[in-house]
Image (cartoon, rainbow over all chains, first blue to last red; front, side, top):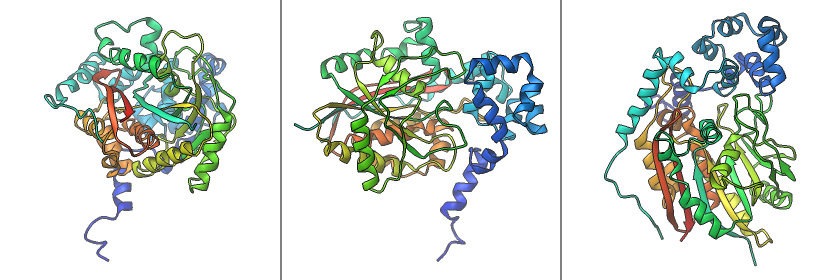
Length: 137
Length: 281
């Protein structure tokens, strides 16, 4: 077995999860309380309760100090670092009226207009002139 | 007479589409290039008249939380409701289920060694509702029944593309042994390339998207050469929703396919969007 010459599948998997990064066991464990709070925002009464008393609402979910600070600072990258998952964080963002382009701008340091323009730019990378296969037997 | 798989309908499902429908923005310069992919699909559906849809999609934190996260979950309910997802979409129409077909799929899948989770209560989110809103925009109630199959694309480890294709093929075998005479539509929703989170937010990959679109009909095994992590690298962290398309393609069976309709457009919201309709050749 020559496992030392090429990284094993497990090693490559773990390296990609940290590099991209991806939401696996480590962030899922770290972020459970924050994600649980965000999950509660599916209900309007809970969104209203958060807006009425943010400190009290966060306390009910036992956010870690790191999570509480990230939420107070509206710092999306810090929420991700604290184990937040974007599908759940998007529900928190919705409370503040922020959409995914606003989140994108906050995470990349661009203005919202710059971020939107960047999204449009991807269209230029669509390969042209290729005739798609219409049928296969 | 046995059930017939009449086609496969694939589409992006981003919440922004629901917002555009709510505002009536379908014909605006920004949205029209996406929505113009759907008239051919609607016309085909009106002719083909499916009775039931087997829909592969992923939950976005409406039905499942991280306390219990099934890799594959099959709905077995008599009805499925949508609900408030917290980001301002309207609550969409409920679906009528098909419990007998659901339990047949569940029996067949477990016999086939897919150890799926069964759900007698299951909320369906925009990943199911928006594709139906796009396909049947003006109906009072959905004209077909639903069997939803949910694939975990939220918390790693995700199932591999290879496993998702195999799941789909097992669903195909189950449909072949079903005694009913339904006309079955297979649906795969989500994607294509997009990333919402982190410093790479806004990432797309037209080359990978077209690789998927070009191979899905005739050579779906080509999509199984990557791990789920590699798909996330190629397609973006939410682009892994292509797993739903791969499983749905498997459920159509291994016969040849005709591409009835295809549309690909960048961007809608943060996403490279596509719609695709395949019909068994």
